[in-house]
Length: 234
Image (cartoon, rainbow, N blue to C red):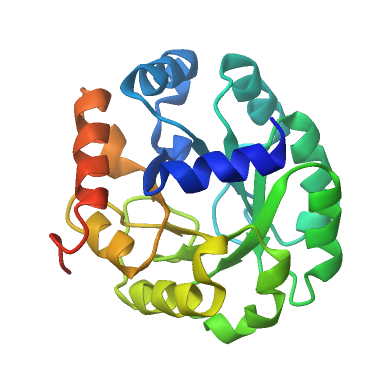
């Protein structure tokens, strides 16, 4: 998909829920993706962990390639890697349409942001909970998306950290409506409304979605709460 059209589609659909496949049943991945498509998912979020930048391993290029063969949904790939520059182009070739990496791993990110854009993918930066917005402020004009982590990356099922809301508000203030804002970690029925009220466009949800049998109902409930701005508070 053309990156300009993809970004336009994501902006138009916002706020939208991005199911995080890290929480899926990998023994039945094809079925899981089919269920998400039937439920109305519009994008899939893939967490790539190297066991070094974060203390856990997830999956790599072969799995992303397999997912790409199973679906035409856009793949939002979050590189939790110590050396994302070594792998970004390969993940693009594997099927990623959106690629984000951590400012903590690449404090001077201009070259990599530009490389990913040249490859035809949308790109952006990710902030850990302890990292201030000021760390990436000067690079916002090179980003299509900024991902705010509301938990420490590496493991699912953690408790949402409300400080992420202040970061979302600050980023929206700085960048206006042109920047897609994403949030990941502890996003569920209780926290999703506060996230969109703070400015989030893309709500990454793992256990809050995959924890039930009826993905369609849960996705509809989460989307409804995301769009009912102001109705849910933390």
